[in-house]
Image (cartoon, rainbow, N blue to C red; front, side, top):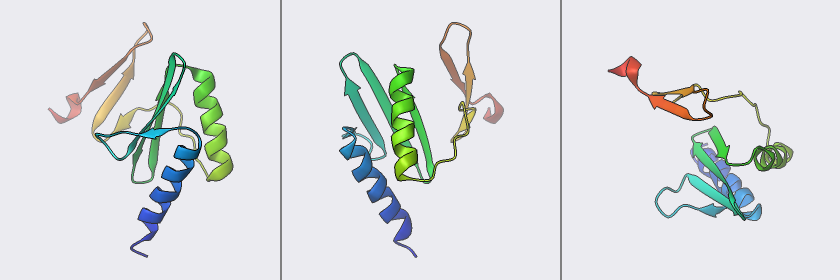
Amino acid sequence: MKQVPRQWFDRLKSTLLQFGFEGSECDTSLFIYKQQVHTVYVLVYVDDIIIIGSFTSLIQQLTTKLHNAFFLKQLGHLDYFLSLEIKYLPNNSILMTQSKYI
């Protein structure tokens, strides 16, 4: 039972590498996919996966591929992650704060 989380991560990692992602040299839980001028980032923390990128269509394609390989529960836009509060601004940017913890 102790090896299950590691085996799950190894399976997810190999799947992402098959999809053309590269592992980050700085963070083993960050995967990066580059296609011409667009980039998609996948960050894995335990059993949570955050997918962000510069092109919505690429994100949707990746989500579909991952859903075919794994059972996914999509929770929509990110609001909180590791004590960070994420706010979406009208100018298509985001603001990350920890105001609740100050």
